[in-house]
Image 1: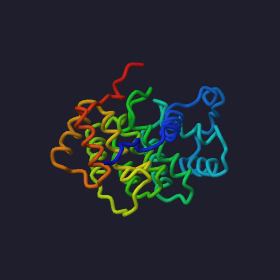
Image 2: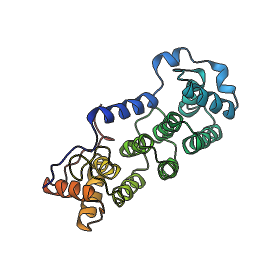
Image 3: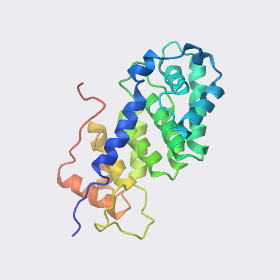
Image 4: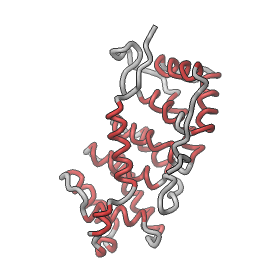
Length: 240
């Protein structure tokens, strides 16, 4: 009998959530030193500086502030926001630097989340799915999964998590605890569904009834959830 293990160490998930939170709202200092002329730069210039700054480890740069402003200010033209998101998606899919792919992905994910000062951008779920299936980097993929419970496109987010959780396990290698290995994306998706309240519970129950999980690890996690009555919480509706 295999012992149930947490899919990823707590510090790893804490780090991912910290990145999402950091990217979700502009730092107070960044707001104070915001450079107004950067908002008039062409989007291509903003993206080029943004990519260069990440590659050279520049923190709180003018280009990064411009990305925040274009997406977060209510008076930013919608066409300019869409153009920036197009560029961020290109970076997430094509950059040869993992950190660039990761941070560009996280910025897109945050723009589609609820609970922000501005309305979430519509149509980002399909972009995040393209980035997920177009990447093999665990950090990029896990960042996308972590963002799903907060996405405004809730039904599509739950369906996407379901598709990830149902992926077969093509690896013959087992982790140090039997089937359980840290960072398995299928069980990661199941854990995120458990953070989507009753909507997540319904998906988990349906997957368990249909034996939809195809990897040994995911099946064991679902069986354990069933034994415990599918406990869930809803992080999108938690009280401040």
